[in-house]
Image 1 (cartoon, one colour):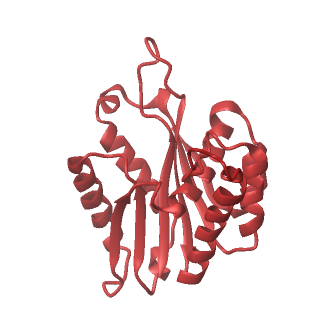
Image 2 (tube, one colour; image 1 turned 135 degrees about the vertical axis):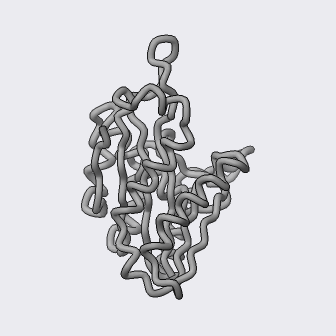
Length: 215
């Protein structure tokens, strides 16, 4: 079974005159094959949360999620050291928002879906022999989810063997540790574009199979 965890970093705000949106927007997919490997990835996230974020026994509020933007580098490093020998890959595309056509800035869902598809284009679905699970961080409304699923399914089914099931799910990151791992890697790539901060990306860059700027 293939597990593909999709998450994004940055925002899709385009009002650079009156607000302060991010200059870039990154969509990243963490791709891992096999139930056992996926389980090891999840356990690494759980262990990091337990030992590094909830290590004080008398904490009043337990942390249930690890986030790229708020997690300090030593904790990211601790997490990665658990999985650096694990076979997985990261695919990412970063949008230069200032170069997006003005008419498209009013259709954020279309921009999101298109960038996500460009990332998925880099994954060799023709090699998939078993079920493909695409698990997306839940950040959309019902109509946007339906539109995303329809668009992506039409793109992927042309590349997948008809006997290989495709399942697209939109889940809360608090409930899915794989999404949290994808968030860490997505943020690292976004941070490199947005702030020229390569510290975290340099640690996991050998796992990155695709990392390009769009526009």
